[in-house]
Structure formats: structure tokens, C-alpha cells
Length: 255
Length: 335
Image 1 (cartoon, rainbow over the protein chains, first blue to last red):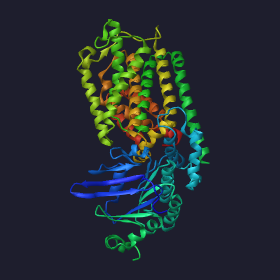
Image 2 (cartoon, one colour; image 1 turned 90 degrees about the horizontal axis):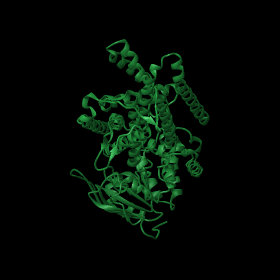
Image 3 (spheres, rainbow over the protein chains, first blue to last red; image 1 turned 30 degrees about the vertical axis):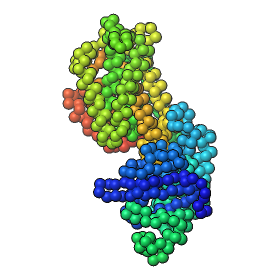
Image 4 (cartoon, rainbow over the protein chains, first blue to last red; image 1 turned 60 degrees about the vertical axis):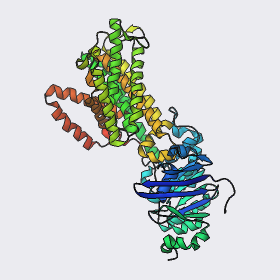
């Protein structure tokens, strides 16, 4: 699926962010088309995490803005952006560890039906929610762990759960911040399979270090170095690009 | 399996709570029979503090926000009740301008008024304080409470540092409230109603969002939850119910002490919550009864009772990590 036609669902325009004298992200523009997987790669310190923070709304840019489905969301906080369809995973899975696995998914399903200001009926007894929660748990392969506290899950299972949580919130755009970080080879393989199965259904912005995963999933790749975009294009072009190889890829792939 | 265990636990805590309620309900006739009904006002005081501590638990235990300023809401509730009763007995208005507010001796007016004023104060303090986190939140709630304390002391009409002696007591639905037992029943009913409503809300969608935000604010924001508004509502409701407890204290003592507004009182409320078990609602009530009973008993034994109370509290916190109630029901409250 190359270049699905249509308006971009996510657009970053000229994002710049400085920390003191360090320019972490400098005039970065990129877009994400419906159903597309756009990977952002770059060496450590290239500004990938800062870029994710700017797009999600956790960081305020010094210049530039973010458009979500054509709407300028540059001044909105993370929760407001999430309500407009931005879902994300974090470098370290962010979950409610004391809640059961099921409750974590329930928290993601809930906002799709109504705001949080309901005080009377027990959340778990709402049948219209329960069906969606069970479906999400089954497809994440976590249904047999549903009633355990999330804290009892392994690192890999927490990643699976976080992805299930984000998917259950039915985002339009998925920000994946190093989803394979800390996973073993077999877990990485399973994750790549799962993401491959999601391709086309969600627009994904993927920040990832594991080059096998990136080249397997990405429709387009943008390379950051020292806060700037040094290359952007189809995977085969990026693989062949001399600047990219010098800056980054040479030491990572086919070494 | 896990499901079955969970049900069994809920069963145990329900049974123990019900037994406690039966004991409390039996207290007035039993004490009368033993000719010990002079203890009833003390028990009423304990119920009122139990209400305040359980209300603080919404913010502290479920919201994970350590408010060091709940004394302000306790005292505000008490002063609102005191002022309404005082002005009613003197026949003067509480406020003549911009709107005319007469005094009142009607509990059905005084209690909602105390809750409303404390709730508005909590909304204002919360709206600013909740923009901060951690130690800053503790300090800013403390600062606001101190501000309220000195403001109230500066009003000579309400007794300043001497406090406010009340010459009138409230009536309920126009009928005089005679003796200590009806006051006890009012406090018990309010406490039980609060516990039922709060427990319900904490298991509903609102409660899951509030508790989820305590465990992982970043996740809740990334899911689109308006965490600030959710917390502000909890803080406001908590302040309003603490104010209700203050009004009960004013009526039972026929006296409003500025001590209710002090930071020591805010600290005592925190101790009650932690001692009894935070995030359990019933635990803080148990904590309130325990702390007040210890204070009562120890101060009768020795002048230096604080020297004894300190180590006892220290031991309780060290030995019962989940609080007394957590120890009794054998599990931390899930989330």
C-alpha cells in the first residue's frame, strides 16, 4: 500500500523545539496519509522522542504546529488531541498497574461511549462496554490474564496490553514510540506480525530502532539527525541514500 | 478462581462493615441502659470526624492528592453553621448586602449551606492547587488553609481566637432536636449515606477515571480523559462533605473553635485516613474512631499523652502498611 490517496490524517508543520541552547527538533515537517505506516528513524539524540512529544501535545513547540485530520491542534493539550483521534504507546508501557488487565482496557473503551462523569452504575456491569473489552482482550491474546493486576504481567505482555488499550480506544492515528524496545527477538517478531496485521486499518507513525521491523512495516521513512530531517522517502530510496548511510544506517544494517 | 477470591474478599469487608454499623446503631439504647449516655456526644464527634476523614479519602486515597488543607473546609462548615445559629438567636442577618441572608436554626438549611460554602471554597482552592503536583500541591493547600484560618480570626464578630459560643441549637424540619441521641442519629445517617454514595461513585465510570489518574496520569491523558476536571470535582465534593462534618461538630459542641481551621486539624485528618487505610472509605472512619479514642484515653491517663500517641501511630503505620482496615479485610483495595 504505497501512497494511499487522500488528505493526510496527521501533519507536522515546521516543528521546532529548543531546550536552552540545544535545538532538539528543528523545522521538522512530515505527514501521514490514511492507512499508511510512516517510520521515523535516526540515531540516539536525533530528536525522535521530542518530535513524538510535540505531536502528542506533551511538549509545546517554539515554532510550527500540528494538524490532525486538517484541524490545527497545535494549542490543544494531550487529552484534547486524544479525543480527536490521536492514540499512542510510550517507550515504557504506561498502564494503570494496580487495575486488572480488563480494567485497563475498559478505561480505553469507556470514552468512546460517554464522558467520565457517570456516578451510579458499576462500570464493569455495563454490557455494551464489556463486549468491546472482551473482544480487545481476545485479539491481544490476554483474555486468560484478564482478571490479574496489570503489575503481574511481564515486560512483553505489558507492551501487548498497552497496544490493546490504545487500539480499544479506536484512534484515527497511532503514534508508536519504540514499540520493540526491550523485547526479545521472538517477541519483536510477534509484535511486527501484529502491527503488520493492523496496517491499512490505522495510520501509524512508527519511531523504532529495530531496522528489520522498520523496513518490514514502513511505507515511507523519514530520517532525523541532530533534530533535522536529512532524508524522507520510500524505504528502497532511504536504503540507497548516501547521507543516511553515513549518518546512521551503515552502523545499523547489513553491517 | 481470581474472580471467586475477589468476591470472597468483598464479602468479608461487607460483613465486617455491617457488624460495625449494627454496633453503632445499638450504641444509643445500650449506653442509655448502662447509664453511660454522657458518651454519646463523644461518639457523635467521632462520626463527624469519620465523615470528614472518609471525604478526605476521596482526594487522598482515590485521587492520590495529599491535601494538607482540609481543616479549612471542616472549619468553614462549622463557622457557617455557627454564624447561621448565632444570627438567628440574635435576630440579625448574616449578610445584609448585596443579598439579604437571615440566620437560621433549621438543620435542613444549615447543613446544605455548610456543604455549599465549603464546596465553593474547595472549588476555588482546588482550581488553583490542582495545577500543581506532589509537594507543591501539599504546600499550596496548606497555604490556602492558613489564609482561611487568619481571615476567620480577623472577624471579631465570630469570636476571633476565643471561638464562637453558640446559644441556640438547630431544629430538624421545624421540630426541636432534644437530647444527644437524635444528634447522634443525624450524624450516623449522614455518614452512612456518604459512604454508600461514595462507594458507588468509585466503582462507576467516574471512580475508575479518578483512580486511573492516580495510578497513571499520562495514560489517562493519552486516552483523552479530562484529568483536571475529574480531580477538581473530587476535591469539591470532598470539601463540601468535610464542611458537612464541620457543621455536625459545631452543633454537637455548641461551640466553634478556630482550631478546626488549623493545620494541625488538617494533619489529624490525614493521619486518620492513613491509619485506617487509604482508598477504602470505611478505613478512614475506623481511623477517626481509633485516633479520637486514643486521644481521649491517653489524655485521661497522662498529661504527656502526645508522647505516647506518637510511637503508637508510628507502630501502626509501620506494622499495618495498608492501614487497620486493609489489615482486617486482608487485602489492599483494588486500585
